[in-house]
Image (cartoon, rainbow over all chains, first blue to last red; front, side, top):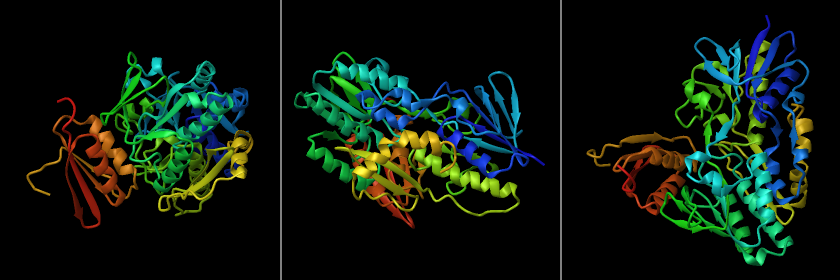
Length: 378
Length: 83
């Protein structure tokens, strides 16, 4: 009997897992359907380069339709309800999709409206539109105070704000306006990064570059008249240019379907990536409430685990393998250098050494992503 | 902890590593009302330091850090903000 596998979401997580499953499961054993409504598939890590004119945005986008391997049914639609009692997903067009296995890979969303004046005052590099706007803004920047950082936690790709800061430093230096600029980095915790030893390493690099940092700074409001931001902790910082990661939440349909609270991230079994008592419902990528990075690299490792598990089950083999929280990601640390961090639930990453080779890996990652990772071949 | 102190909200972040428990505490704090008492359970010893530092920095009241069998409990009172 053919199994019906339904994947919700056509971002990194949904695309990788669908392609991986298609490699592992014969077409006669399972139909794979993906529902998503993305207009483009944007390789978000290039957001640290596009605003600085270091990469062409055209090389960082593809049409989602062309990213699914042969044998996958891609449905362009918006998910309006997930009914796990009746194993049924409804879409905006009114269609109903039933399943034997459900994979929720709906990601998360930006909610700039949670901070008044965010849209008119702050810039960011977390979307293609945001990156292009920021590029325009930076080209007219002549010097002054730049405030950069995540407005709150959680947010996608935790290293990205410091990566962008290092690349911005290089950009300002090249343009000859570094001496006229103060860079202020803010972070919601009592250090500049989520993981302590990496934070110590980054703080040292910030000190060498005279990048000032302000920790325990959760952005509460923006005073557009006085051009300053205020923190939940009671501090304020003036700015001439504000580069803030917008607040994030899970998708509304997740909350509306009763799968999560108002914030919208789904609680999952951290070792099996299953939802509640449902062994046939998996959640991967940014949609989860797991205490690990919300990043494409995480989605990649989770997909590897879930795809293998479902393929094993369908072939009749019962696997008790567990996902151990493994993730690896390469992060830019400035001066054309980067370092790769490896971690799992029980092993925090160690900031060991930066290298040019790691920077090359990062620089070419869009090509690796579109040609191999997304296709499920690595 | 004094048994008269009844937390308005308890966050069970046991098994989650720092900064997970602190993130959960900040999330709960944002949703809390003035004078609410929030308690966070954590198995990560780093939470004692990080959460205490954040509570003090944000000008709220740290009621205490208590050690139970296998986990820590950090208790705060929201003393800043609207009712």
